[in-house]
Image (cartoon, rainbow over all chains, first blue to last red; front, side, top):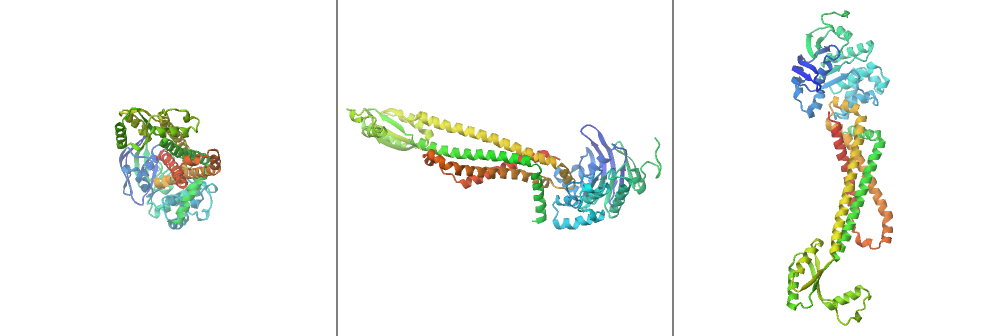
Length: 236
Length: 293
């Protein structure tokens, strides 16, 4: 589903954000990208939805050669992906329903499909009863669920999450984590960049660790810290 | 077409439009001023061109013949001039007629009865097809045997041609400046809207809206500025014409004769098109520049 071969990303200021990364993510996988701030987790995701363009290497997402993609084909790529951010990126002057519908409307969907699909995803994220409320009236977890509903409304095969729980308290965090797991169970490939130890350690899924833009470890059922079990903390 | 889609799209355009109403008013006002100027210019130009062509039409070349020119020489001159393709008409005016004309033109101020002898020579009155050829024809005719002197309104012809050219240049200059100003103001208005909506735009790009789709509301906004401005201008011009035209005719009765009638509906349609074009081009450029993503 996602394949990177020898991918590097050097920003114009000379910073090497991603350094020769090779990574395979199969259909239906659930993958955590972990690492300290500034190790390239976000950069790696940005490469996948072509917010950034790789300097070298080959990137294939859902059969699309992202590294060679022409600018006018980027919208087509993004319709195969859902992306969720730490700051939700909701429109504050639109209701929950309108925020989710917006993602369909701006890609030219038929009203008929919007009317059918929006209630379906709102139900999936458990926000049917909040559909007429504005983001300012929601909790952080509900706002993030709205963002997830928006990311899913176009039926993407892949969901990319960049620190989805970064702004949330533990209760809301576990709510979002559970939701991501449910989405994954329905067959969507999920990639989550996070530095939330609790989330990673509780889920025990595949963990790809980045250090200075390089993949240092890739474990099938990993913990947040290398070689440590749940509840253990590195000293210092 | 899906009516829900249309409603959503129009809603977006109207939201854009009302978001910075102050700028929209400025943009629309500038377009209106530009188009009023353009309308006035077109009107004045056609009036001037018409009056000018009438004046120039009246300018004839007078080729005075030598007193000792033989009938054969006169006939040769007539044949030669008649063959010239630049000549529209030619008329032989014997000195007797010339005197009668002079008397009529001066309203009797010159008492020709006092003259013991007719001092006027015979002449040819020649009219050119194109006023621009008058000087060249005069020069040709002057060289013919039997021709004493050639007179035409040299100064008037040159002045009229020059004046027309200068006025046209000034008018075009002013209008070009106003077009540029209107374009810049519209594109700034669009830029403000783009800025105000950068979150929406980022999200649209994220979920895979095509560039065309993202740009269309902004282009429509510019188009709306242009068309509303032009409508305002056309209304102003029509009102001004209705109010001022009767008074102008009163003050300058000859205006009715010297101003060529223009088809006002065609002019209004053209001005509207121009307004739409300003809005379209300005917003197109602005959006292209500020949505590079």
